[in-house]
Length: 312
Ligand code: AMP
Ligand code: FES
Ligand code: ZN
Image (tube, rainbow, N blue to C red):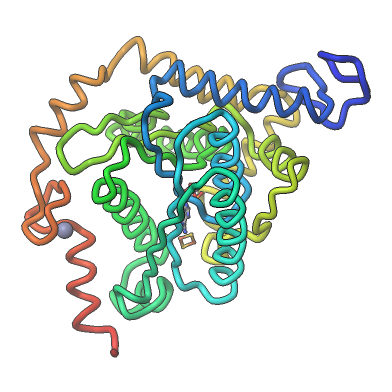
């Protein structure tokens, strides 16, 4: 198998693009897909400061690497969830990568430790407040990503969600007809109200397999293990189904998610209508000032409850 572009020996075949690439041309392809995502979705410019949420997994570390190589000003944020050896290992991978990019690009790493604030790691905390672990985790991560971006004056906050993540989420939202979630499933969400950072997903054009290959080829040391709490989750089930379809018909995920984006862009919501909708329902949390639809935001409610039930 030879590289479609330069005809030397290929290291990876990409059935959905009917192409194969050598290492150099594959890196070029990955960088080009990210650059196209940034441009077409108007994510950010060279003057903007970008905060990348890094979990220690392949996607987010690859994202940090790609954005730096494309010449963007980026720092990282790691949220230590306190999930035993999984968190210890992922923290170590993030620290190692962050040290390298601090030396090469002057990039900084922000850290938030759940245990320090809540008095317990995510698993114990969720048990004590009687909530599912993954939704507790989601609330905390979303809150901290936004808080750090706003407090440290970043222009935009980026996550490593890839094509597989977005296609699986879209499948879940469609299966349950969660229309209000569908409206917010785009790869670029504006800072609709004061206190909300702009949020982007520059990897939405790349698959999980392509990002794993990118990380391996570029010697990015990442945690291979998935979060132990995610075992058997609906998202993993949707990903499995989509992978089966992809094997039979390469390009299925791309057609599904990109097709959805195309339809959304023709239909709505424009940046203005979304901002107007948000303005109508969101106001500052009376405890922390982050925008919320309730009086006190779900994060502050959770932390208040933690204070009463977590032994200190
Ligand atoms: P996940 O929800 O685990 O699929 O992760 C999606 C994205 O969220 C990752 O690509 C990261 O950008 C970000 N992320 C997940 N977990 C963390 C974490 N513990 N700290 C910082 N960012 C994270
Ligand atoms: Fe949040 Fe696993 S990453 S519970
Ligand atoms: Zn609050």
